[in-house]
Amino acid sequence: MSTNAPYPVFKNPVDYLIQGCERPWEVAVDPFEVAPRTWFVGNAWVGAYLLETSEGLILIDSTMQPQVYLVFENIRKLGLDPKDIKLLLLTHMHYDHVGGARSIAEASGAKIMLSKQDHEFMLAHPEQIFDEGYPFGSFEVSDFYQDDKPITLGDRTIHTILTPGHTPGTTSFFFDVVTKDGQTKHCGLHGGVGLNTLGDDFLTEHGFSTATRSDYLASMRKLHNFQIDITLGSHPAQVDMLSKVARIGPDCNPFDDPSVWQGLIEQRIGQIETLIAESKLEPAC
Image 1: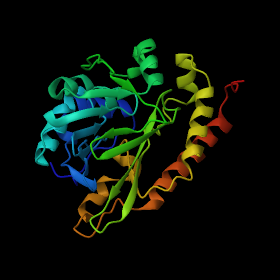
Image 2: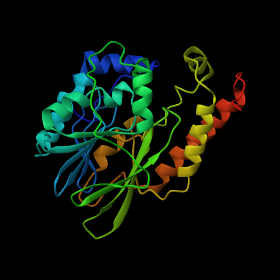
Image 3: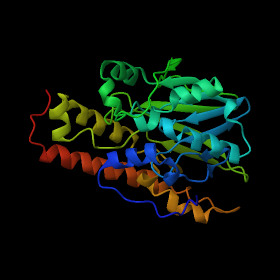
């Protein structure tokens, strides 16, 4: 399916999950390069990113279990082998990002990494995975992220930063690439900017503290001044990725735009500040 296909727009995020699990072919997207040796291999709803290293492949996020075949097919379209995935890095513990983790690990032997905070939250609150009854296999986490310990595989290094809010252990990823003309570009992927878990109704229904909003705001402010050249969306629509694919060329990377990161972070800071100001719940002490 063409990357420029007219995908439906739903008001309820659950409808995207239903579509993605029951009719995954409707959200199929051909892989495309976002940075040197770095590709989008996800779908129209949720992102997944493949990094080639000198010692194998790193995959960031798994998409949902019924969509794993799309991820594998995209990797094969690049002339690479899914069995060469050595590390599977998960941004946070929601189903659309971790639902295919077990299948990918079993097929490739990849080690899975997740934040300790989200691993504990997932075990304590499995209902917060939001799998909506679709296939989900539990998985073993080989290691946890540490902000002061970069992840290295072969000649590629990824720095992680805990950015709680969307979930307690949402983690963001940062790495550099070198272009064919020798320029160093900084890539950034915020692990989860969604506000759907921070509204009054959600917090009240699940008995969670409004402190999660303060965590979100603090983490966004921490990343505000980061100089990011290439922004990767945990969901491509967050930074309008799919509309830019047609502009990819030998001398044009449409994703190389420092204003995108600043715009995304500033937008979300404004939105969470408004949500806090308009909240009818008592703020956490």
